[in-house]
Length: 273
Image 1 (cartoon, rainbow, N blue to C red):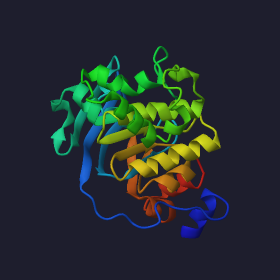
Image 2 (image 1 turned 90 degrees about the horizontal axis):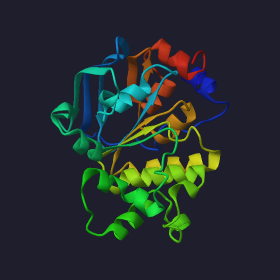
Image 3 (image 1 turned 180 degrees about the horizontal axis):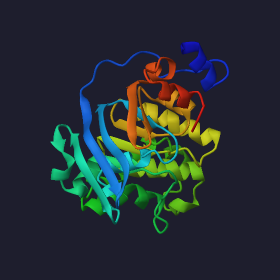
């Protein structure tokens, strides 16, 4: 099975996961029997999933399988959708997210969306600091926060002389890194990324992937991606969803070479999706 899956994924060789297995880590997030609805339609059903701290977990699956809905549940954005409902439990460090203030949750659990969305009326600097304004927190040294966040997002050298320019004046790849800097500025414990490279060129994609690898030792990253190669390159764990249900989750290397479920094998080898 290993060689067939390997060859079906890409011609030739492909790096799978990290170079060395990660040491055992505690779980940052526990999802327990989670069901999310839009009106009467269930988008995900009975999902139970553990997400280890300070790792990159990829969520894969065909369009419409519930990947983005699951991600939005992890920082309580789903329930902000009119007509949406959710049942089950999501624990962050052992505490139920629904017992917490949503604003506090979204500071601890940041999110980067599929398309770059810098605030159009704000400068690069103000975009980075926007999270503080939304939560009513004033940073002690705003300029230090801006520089640190932009450096972590690998953007500082490109914009340090243009901090007063509108964020929307940057290129698409730069705008996405600005949005990542905005999320990182408030020092989140978890960073959710919903197909962050789908609208970017290969060069910008490579920069985002490098950034993900760099922040993972400090921040738990959960990334939705349609790109199997990307999941293999950047993640340590992979979860496969199909028709709103979790089919399989495990180490990325195992999922891509020795999946336990035939449906997983058929998806990652391109037989559907």
